[in-house]
Image (cartoon, rainbow, N blue to C red; front, side, top):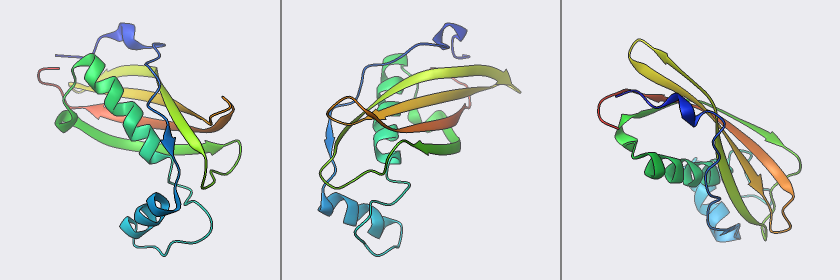
Length: 132
């Protein structure tokens, strides 16, 4: 069943605040096969964007196993630092159907505890159909 077009422009609830700890950053870097340094890896926002995507999928009753992650981009307002407390709010930017699949464009705005925008994560998700 295709995803409903009325999702375009819809914003979902923000994620629970996530503390950026040295230990979590080190574990993230290790998962990438990199040594943990002083800086937070530039792909670290995927952790928050994935939390936001899970909120979206649960709200729309879309099974994760029917999603293919097509593309990811990050635009920074400032670097993420150890000690930050971050939330992500996902909105659906676009939706189109191609060959029986839904191509869903999402934007996750990642904010710090003060409400300042830190990073924007844009993703393309391919929903392969079936029951949603």
